[in-house]
Length: 239
Image (cartoon, rainbow, N blue to C red; front, side, top):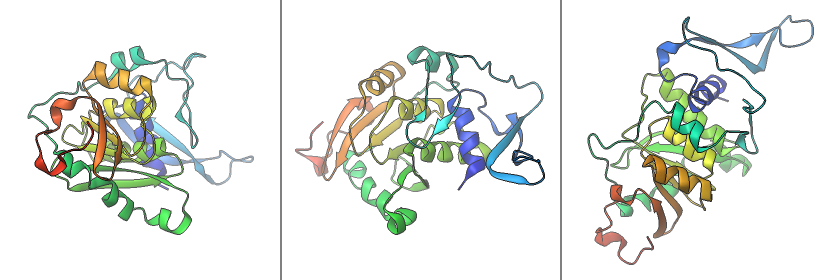
């Protein structure tokens, strides 16, 4: 589901678009099947606004996404640095209490309605710094769930997401950190481990990266200035 948002969010993650007005329309592709007579509901055609450059597709830059690994073949830290439109900044300052972070995984789990029926989906959610649930999406791949969130924000004119916390089920990979940076999200939290490259990207871009967010504890790998570590509610939690 959410095919249009998935496609739009992927284009944001790739640095192709950053504002709703850069997308002319998104439709299901007619004629993708042999014979070309009817729409194909797993192929999406995105038409960019005239003047928006189409990315140069090269052998070094494989632009496709899969349910297993998300974005594949990303060039690395340099590619994110050169294509990110919104530097992660604190204007106004974003501060999140660790005690608030510790309750977010349970709130995300409570919203995973398809997971309740299938037991087979990841999820991602956006929260305000005060803990308000802004949006939540599910998908077989957590990368796709994040693209759906970002795509919905793009199409509704809400980018950059500079006043939000992104929470993901599973690990915090480099690709997920990349997607957060490309959408201007200042805080990324995951219930499991981050990759070392995700930590490198977070340190370089100023992203707050939290991993192993479980129960009353967490690890903070970068951007600790956005967490109120003096909170008495989390006394004794790992940082």
